[in-house]
Image 1 (cartoon, rainbow, N blue to C red):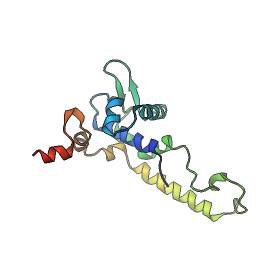
Image 2: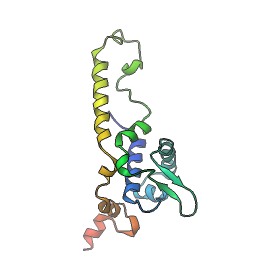
Image 3: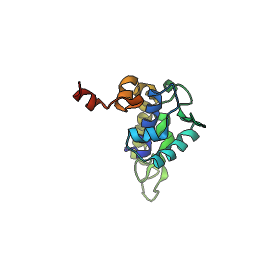
Length: 156
């Protein structure tokens, strides 16, 4: 199974916000930290806001924040919100019913079991788990004006 770029960027944005819990994060800062398009990130933010995985704050000092503790947001929730399809094969869940085995195929049952196991593992991991080393993330993402790790090591 391969996850989309949208899911990848969504998880990164949530990790960024988890590493920056004291103030709203700016989409421009997140996009710059991960060298991604702001326009694309704004589209992903809409998906996350609609799924109650991100909250926007309006105004001069606004931005985006997690709507609840990072320990309460699982990677599984993010994947379910950002992935459009979990079709693992053409015939999965009746996707292409022209196969003569479609109603009696053991492959579909195995794929269902694999998808359930995949999502169960993601449901055990929270955004807080991914952002556990908050200070390290803040440094690597150059938050609060810190230098990137490579430059900091070279200048020591």
